[in-house]
Amino acid sequence: YDSFSNQLNKINLDEFSRLSFFRWIAMSAVGGGFLVDYDAFPIRDFVQEGLKSHKPGDKFILYDNFLSPTLASGSASMWHNMGKALLENSKQHVTTIHSDNSTSIAKKTFWTDTMGLLELSRASPPNQEFLKNIRSLKVVVDGGKALKSLDQYVRPEDCTQRPLRGRPVIHFSVSALYEGVGVKPEYRHPQHRLSVAREFFQEFSIVCTNETKWEMKR
Image (cartoon, rainbow, N blue to C red):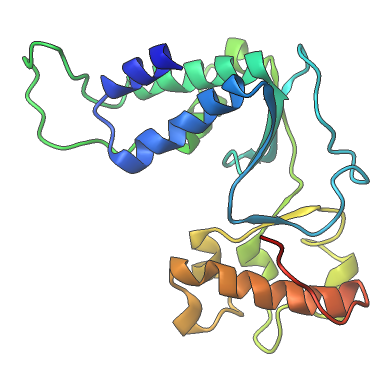
């Protein structure tokens, strides 16, 4: 952790970008496993959908393609190796801070781990060393595509159709609030993600699971 942190501190990233890299080394430090973004929510049972923990040596799995690490899993060594690769990639896009202050710094750089994932996955020619230990799936629902109805978030036909059918997680990202045509204009600010999620799941529980009430557990 200390080595990773020291290297990261020498790269001229803005604070938001810096924080995005720490989750990789944090997951390695705790022994690996699942990581899920705070604005992603389960709509089905993980185990029933085949999303189980992975043993050391298994591939690192991204469940939202290479779009982002919204939901990801792997062993401690996989998390470490991925974080290291992303850290090295970031150095190509930012100014390095030298200890003798010889580098003139005008502005901190916005370059997140997600941007690094996209670049490394789309490299030409393909970065085989990076890709060989990664499996990419698409089981995360884009909240923007789910919030598509003007009169209600969830309709009966949505329960058995894409994008909700067969996918266990929904991600209410910042962009989802802007892209979801069913989101009221006053709810499109990032601070309203929890409110939109509550309304969605209240409807989902009634329409798709025949429950009368859904409660968000803290």
